[in-house]
Image (cartoon, rainbow, N blue to C red; front, side, top):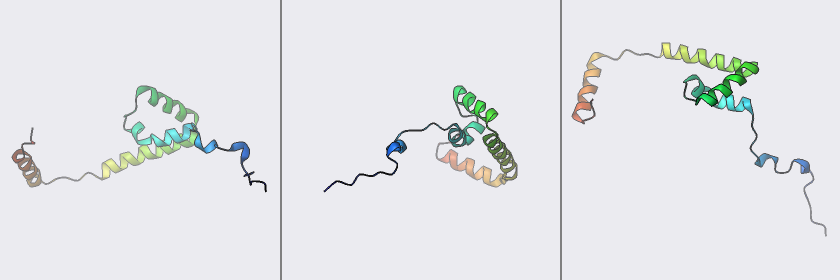
Length: 98
């Protein structure tokens, strides 16, 4: 009796076990760290070059950058002064105030 051997995908066997570098995936994965300026200079340069060459990623970054600005403008609540004082007093009581 012959042993059954898989025939489908034989030339690509194990391809999914190897890391694959995809500049678009890297760009999207680092979206917010890029926008927040939290990348090293080298990584930031690499992502910036990719954005200059890849219009779909550039558009995604542009949209996310705009969205981040809108959210930061719209999601600011004024904290009542009485709450500020209570929090400051609580921090002082815990020895955490500066």
